[in-house]
Image 1 (cartoon, rainbow, N blue to C red):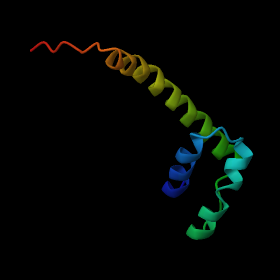
Image 2 (cartoon, rainbow, N blue to C red):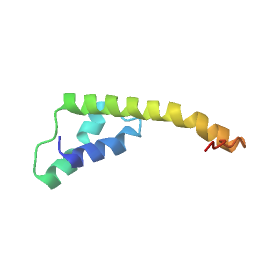
Image 3 (tube, one colour):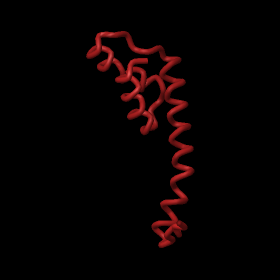
Image 4 (spheres, one colour):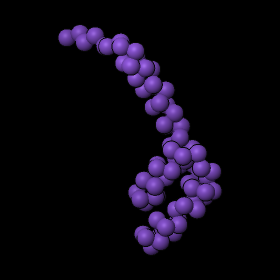
Amino acid sequence: MHEDFAAALRLLAGFSLPHAEAWRLLIPVAERLDVPRPSYWRVRRFLLAERERRARVRAEVDPVVADLLAGFLPIWRW
């Protein structure tokens, strides 16, 4: 998959768009690159993987941010 398609899909993964709508929104990117869009299947798989990755990152980062906002600072041991 072309990197511009991947970048567009990473951006679109943050919205709760259906897979078909995200696939349709790639039309301007395909026209600009003068290449065909990736298949619906590839777009669907990419969005599922990206949304799962974001959920994992969020699950790791949210507790740390919550602790920092609550005033808990990490103790650095050298």
